Image 1 (cartoon, rainbow, N blue to C red):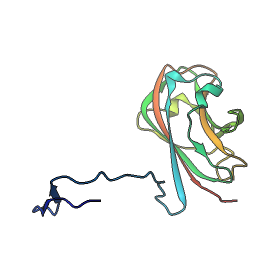
Image 2: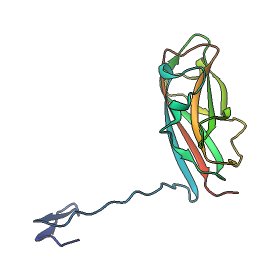
Image 3: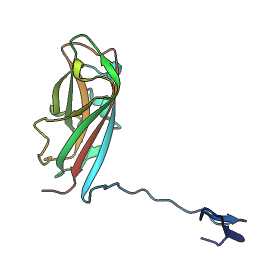
Amino acid sequence: MAKRDSTWTNQDGLYVGFGTREVETNTAGGHAPKGAIQTMTMKISGANLSDAVAAADLENAAVIPADALLVSARLFVTTAFVGATATLDIGTYDASDNTAEDDDGIDAAIAVGTLTDNAVVTCDGAEIGTVMPHAMKLGASYDTAAFTAGEATLVVEFIADAA
């Protein structure tokens, strides 16, 4: 990186430069807030869910690597879900062919009454606390009835190469 022609530090301690310089190339990196634990998020829109996750819905989904230990998952509801008797399933899908591994392995049958504004749901599906046998994607679907509204963010914590 070329130095700036002129620099100074303002009273807040901010480094300020003038003149031309080369562009810095940024590189992507992972986020590991708790040591080896990594975090993945997924937005869930109730109105866009179907009663089964289609392979096309998973085409661009993020992948949890093979041999990763699923430490925890929490669902943060930002807009209340609406649907008379609807329930929410969150599960895992094989990353190689987008088929269901365990379609409610993160959490099963979360009732619409639980999915209220600002609710936090601690997921307790069968795959929490287990090591993924191969690379997985996350998906969500409804059971019993469709949702007509609702927004949430799923946060999954995992440790890569835990096997």
